[in-house]
Length: 189
Image: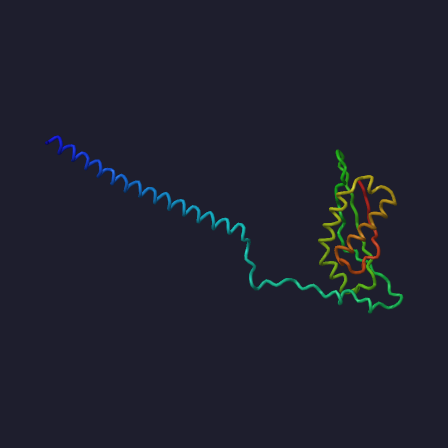
């Protein structure tokens, strides 16, 4: 009988250890589950901040461009009124697209503007667009090769392309207000 009592006590002890071990396992599972939830919440918050961008302050206002009617007034053109030059563009320096050789071009451009564009408000409008124009021209000249800039026929083609693109960039489908493009400087080295 003593053996039977010992066996029953051993069984009870094993069952008691099992339930205590089960309690410890349950605690560790909850602890791991809590850590996973906290890591997921932190990662989700970080991702939302990265993808969400910066909020725009309420007091920020967009710059107001002058009305096109103020800048372009064909009705105000008097007979004999001449076009006017816009020469405030910085010289463009760009590497030519020549493999194996380092060649560059330096170009200073003057835009001859239509008399339909107000000679007082027009330069203000062009000053605002100056960075856009210079960026486009730098990219344009960087795509040309030495053969593309050689000879008067090529230079005339370049002038026409600049005129067309500047009119498109600045005025869209309106009438062209850049009448001519003039080179103040055109050097290839």
